[in-house]
Length: 230
Image (tube, rainbow, N blue to C red; front, side, top):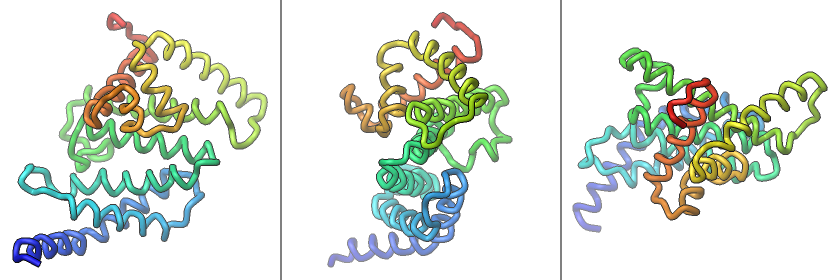
């Protein structure tokens, strides 16, 4: 092994050792966001594997902090694991899809996970409000996708409210531009990741994220009753 390779391995190992608690924290956080269908120890193991992958791929010359780079890759690894393991459970898949989509929105809008909706005092009030609305829209879309194949029967009152919400969302989805509508359909109803959905349109991962963020933003604006020329 060359001296350069040895140094790189040492740097990777140091990053992993310094961020094991961070990876565990993210796994615990995700376990609270998702239905109780997965053992926490399994999620922590996947998070640690995601941390190792992040440390291996991290390039400090690009200017990003490692915690920023690792945040999305650790959570992404756990969410990919959840989606793959829950192929027969629409409720879990819907929650995982929404969590992954929200992470993507946060990365697009804010970039640094240190500035999340839970610690965004530095952000302009309108920007934070818009992003929270977009996150709520993403979770509502996931709920709608889940209702197309509910895991448990709904009582009549809940079913009525869900049906009304579904009709309202579907009517607003129907008037979105074709690609934006198709992106939301593939992510929230067909169970594809944002990157997988983007490949259908021949888009890179970066442009897929931008299309998804634009689609959620357009839908959020419509649901808020603001035409904005849409």
